Figure 1 (spheres, rainbow, N blue to C red):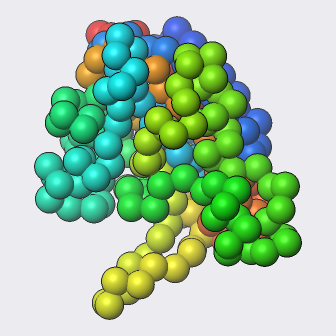
Figure 2: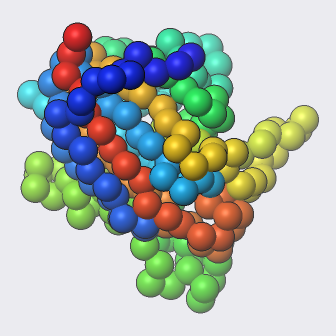
Length: 209
């Protein structure tokens, strides 16, 4: 589905550097637009009810409610209590991951040994960005991984593949409540996910229509 934001000016406009993250607030009814600037860049997104940070996005509940693991336009990301937090309103790529969550230092060490030591991870990005909202590391939820390409084989095995997104491709989410949103540009450079070359992304926030 094409964007409904043509000719509208954003209220907020951010660039997230390669390998880093961002946390910000949005009002109910706002639209969050994630833009892959250079192509082949995935990102993790999480969300919290701004007025009750214990109410946070749950990919597991979202999958159970939707009855599927492939999310795109019209699908909702809900909380543990099945309260809608985000609705996908436009999606240029239609390939995302909702199963694997965010990479972490422990995951890097386990998968990559010494090569993963000291590398940035999405979980570290979220910890850094959400500290000012007093969100503890253990309260950071699993994420929807935008544009992440994890083909699933006939026996359920998963493999890393390069993102299908092209320069300028975007996905848009409508905020169903006042939210705190975290987005992390995937820093992974040891697998094909980002074409072995993490790059920047752009985030725009548009007011409710």
